[in-house]
Image (cartoon, rainbow over all chains, first blue to last red; front, side, top):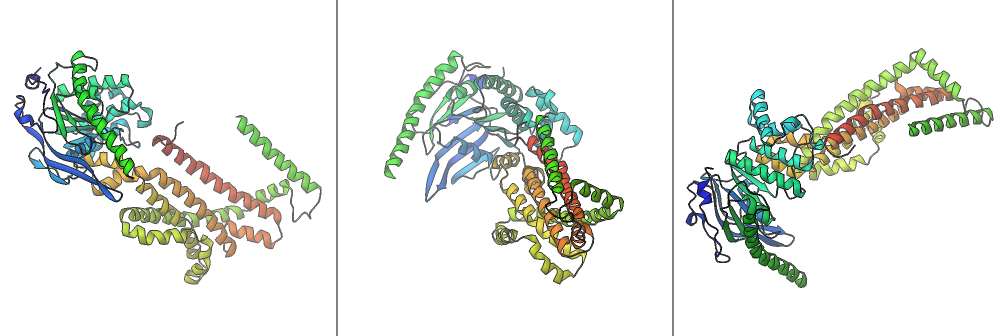
Length: 294
Length: 252
């Protein structure tokens, strides 16, 4: 495996709560920075007032890194991902990708959502070709690349099928192929397997790791599932309850491919979960507190 | 199969009841014809080419009027969904006008266009255009936001977003509107042809009345129902079902 850089990193087990640990000071990942979030925050207007979704976030994501973001529900994980995708604009601070400021969504940062978001009027192949067609690629080339991407997710025999004929796991694999075919700089995944059953999810974990090993894409993977994060990530970033800040980072040095029931994965997950539980409790308290005020 | 059998039985029973009532001679024959007399009227009408000419005249009007409605209505709906100002202003007018039965446009049309084809086509357009526009606007506005976001991250913008994502996503709703628009157009056309006479199925109905020929009246009514049903079942139901199935809005 050529992934020795990340393997040599250690779990940071005792980072101070609430501070921001820069990965640049941690580990020896020699790769250049792919994504940089500088003092980024986000608020939403909700009814009469505003809700602070994300506190101040500083984060660097390196090339070829597989970064997982976990946190209690409502902590702004998805918001963070949308900021990188350019689907939302930060309140303060800046998001940089490849040294350029992010000003809007683009095919260099494809998002895979919890729902597959496939176009039902197109075949599987048509869906995968969608982005290439927008880019103006020729028919033969389009077809060839789409088939390659489908082969990567083992769905090349389903090119002519329609979306409604597929199972949930297959749909999500098509969404993955549709993203991969664009050859994006970064793959942004927003709880992509949360709606799937456990068996399908395990299969897709293996598939995603294999794809990552082959393509070396930078992946940012948002999940509420601590085990999933520990299993997939090179690094797991834990966010606090709303407004989300980086509470702690965990570097994962377990050998790949990993499985969700590996002892290393489980022990790391236990550590992350201990911290996460505090935050879940806090979030819960705040909800109850708000309830009293009303 | 069982459904079809029951349905056939029902219609046979209906015909027999009709025949029985006819034989009871409750009403004079010219007011209450028998099923066979109506059938004879149908056969005569078609063999003398009168019905064919009437059908052709009516269909020509509806093809022109409805065609314009589909084109303009879809565009109008798109514009309305795209620009909020248009929606708030013109949109409210469209909703208001939609409550006006389209035949109420006939006096206006006659004054503007005189006793001409234009007047009747105008009534047909006013009957169907608005519902098509409303359905298109609804479909576009209810495009799943997730599909738009997904397309955005793949680089879709502006016109491409409309052509490749929003319009196809709105298609089930647009077809629903076209179906409703068709039935409104058909009704408006018949009403118009009844009131102002020059060819067409509506005129055949009027002639039947003037001649006290109830068999012809009922026969033409059957023709009108037949055409309406054909278009609804053969065109819109099939189109709508296949689109809904493909779009995953309907399982089966």
